[in-house]
Length: 221
Image (cartoon, rainbow, N blue to C red; front, side, top):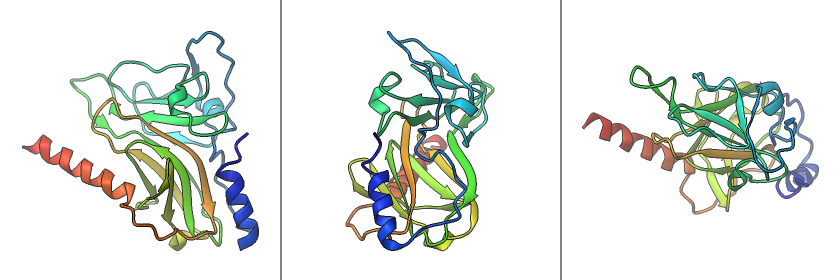
């Protein structure tokens, strides 16, 4: 059962007062409908079944969600993870979600795309922070504004979004990697009434932007 992060946040919100008005959905990816895969295999899920409520960056191989394994090509991919599908990227509960940057179509006449996962909704009134589980070179945006993420230990992160409370924006998760082999996995996204704790950690987002800027300089040199 998925209780570690979500259950703790629910308990905390009960103490801090209710957070209402949200219309973001499937933030823990547990609404996915995936078949059993005894002995392995590969299934292509449509987005309504594999990631209800979420949309994605465009590309030749992004119309379906991989379940069981992923392709070994150079285009973007999106995958539902579970104990049967990419278990090393399963962060919590039955399902998490992973996505990998790549080319929009097959090279050479194609652009490299930083894969994104997104949906639009209303940030609940009274929200102080966005909390989530994540692995990999991730950046988070609300609208066009970056949300710096602070490490809470392990795969847990939090970002201050109190200025967005009660507003409707696109929540966008971006894989910052310029390489094909660095997937991002996400899970347990929570709009919390708790503020971001003051921890002596460097923002994950800042690290990601630094890596992205360095890669851009290498390409120009």
